[in-house]
Amino acid sequence: MTVLSAESVAKTFTEGRDPVHVLRGVTLTLDRGEIVTLEGPSGSGKTTLLSILGCILTASAGRVAVDGVPVDSARPELLPGIRRKSIGFVFQQFNLFPALTALENVEYALNIKGVKGAAARREAAAVLEAVGLTERKDFLPRDLSGGQKQRVAVARALAGHPPILLADEPTANLDSQVGMQILETFRNLAKRENRALLIVTHDPKVRAIADRVLTIRDGQLITDAAA
Amino acid sequence: MTDLALKTLLHDRLRFAITVAGVAFAVMLVFVQVGLFLGLMDNASVIISHVDADLWVTSKNTPNIDFPHPFSDGLVQRVRSVPGVARADNLIMSYYNVTLPNGAQESTEIYALEDHQRWNVPWRVLEGDLGDLRRGSYMFLDQSAAKRMGAFRVGDYREVNNARIEIIGRTADALSFATTPVGFMDFDLAQRIGGTLLAGQTNYMLVKLAPGADVERVRAEIQRRLPYNDVHTGPEWAAQSRKYWIVSTGLGLNAGLTVFLGCLVGLVVVAQTLYTATMDHLKEFGTVKAIGGGNRDIYLILAKQASIAAVVGFVAGVLPSFALRPAMASAGLKLIIPFPLVVLVFVGTIVLCLGASMVSFRKVAGIDPALVFRT
Image (tube, rainbow over all chains, first blue to last red; front, top):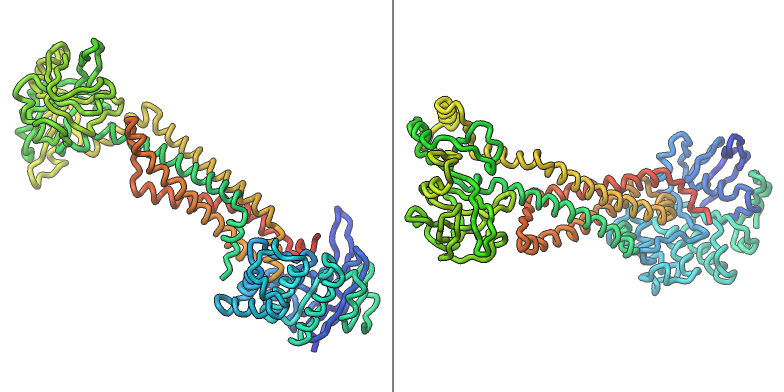
């Protein structure tokens, strides 16, 4: 069942007076329980595509639907609601809140999604346990290793049970062994809960956990094949 | 609910301390300036406020209680016969030269009445019996006079306008705007040693109304009978005396300007520190947006941080302001901080800090959440 679809998506930025066509007619779908990687060189449009699929940016043309809801480019004020309900992000730089402990980082994301109080604390503790960080739940990010930080980020993305998980270069700042361990964990948790996971990466080793590989170049998808 | 606003604010303690210090400085500046101003204004009308009189009769266009002009003391008979007047007495307020033991002279404000107790002047007697004033060449001195005249005791003698006068009592809280020493003596004695200027003259008349008498009707009748005098109610006369100092000396403008500058300093410090803090945490605000937060969530974070800085800064400013009062009093300065001023400054602090955070609001509202993807 498709949870994320893009049809003929284009994105054009303006640099000075010149239009820059970053995406040109991208069409793709993502099904529940499917793990997909999006590969491509720098400047190919990977992150822009991820931003549009994650309802952070809107497309200049084309159609996007998230969990069955069409994204209306003319109403950007609706995007935060879609992100809250349907999407979990993992960032290359982890982007944890430095003043909050691991548990609080996850709990805060749940608060944003409308889960409050003891229920939020219970769920935050549960997802941290799922990524193997129970013993470090009360640590601030500065006291965690890179791998542990990324586990917290994964836990934060999983919190609230969003059907779509989007990860931007999640292993770029980690050594390859730790990176693969985290991806394995991420993959297993996504599969277990039947969530779609799209991973933007430069790292060819990430293909090992993917069901399908997309390749983008110059703003166009050039391959869409089973891993 | 995880309190991202509070935790982020406290995470950078140095910045938080600077913000709080800025607010506290502004709050303290406002309290001290306004408190001193109110203290001076209180001094300017303290006698009027304590005199148990409903109406004051002054010479025409007397601007202020400290600048009296004499008029005939016989006019008091006309006032006493006005229906609705329970009693009326002459009051001399004039400056007398007091010769000190070292030969120096000190100008002193003397309030002279036939019966001081009847008019509640002075209102705080530390030593002596006011009833004794009419029995001879005596005077009471306010203890604040010691600052200008040096130490004195009951039983000491001083030359007042070349007359030998015994100090038979001490009072407290009778102060003048210009910090001139204040004393009290019998009306006849004051007239006698006041020279030709006060012979058969008075400066003011105090009027007490009979129960149920209409103030405006009595005032109009006194005014009709004394067309070359002015008649004021106590509150009006106190307000006019205060206004004179506020306007003629530029004191009001000075106090207002200092309060404005204090608020401006506080506003700039808070705006600047909140803005730099926002800039430093821009990526975190981007993350809040990326995980589904809206501008409202970020506004609430900034507003809460500004409010916390305001409350902590207010407390850090108000406590030393109150603690300063004894030190100020020992220097002869009155720092009056009434409760409504505390409430007003508290509300003003919150409003100014929230206003200061608007600068950050504007910046954050335009954050592109896609910045979370930038390395």
